[in-house]
Length: 133
Ligand code: SF4
Ligand code: SF4
Image (cartoon, rainbow, N blue to C red; front, side, top):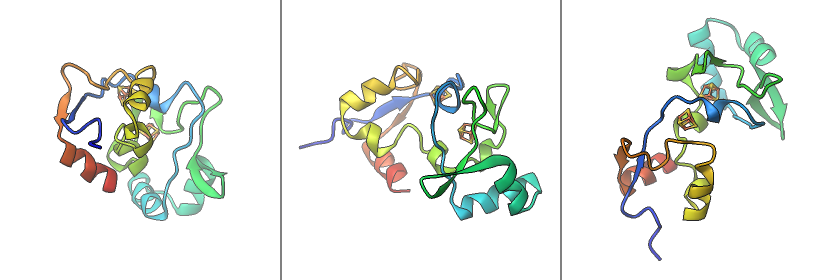
């Protein structure tokens, strides 16, 4: 059976900040991603781990503030945008959201950019390549 997004998807990030705040979540970071971020922040790994991360399910995740904002969300913008983890840069093309149209539609309560009329067009092949990394 053909995937529901065989004809592509339109997506536009409006910068609403919802995916980085408002509800509990988990953004995991790999060692490689940590290296990229600490180079940008000009701090060492120990300081980064201490100030910006927490242990979650045996992995390293970014800290959240008490209101569930990501620790790197500043004035509704990602303060490490160009160094943000892959989990953030590949959103919303996550396997769990592409699994079914129902999952995709359900995510619209969180992200207003899905199927946005002014959104950029992503072909099936482009989406597959984002998913594969
Ligand atoms: S929820 Fe969607 S529109 Fe809002 S910041 Fe995140 S990706 Fe962009
Ligand atoms: S790292 Fe940036 S894009 Fe990712 S959740 Fe935090 S603020 Fe949002």
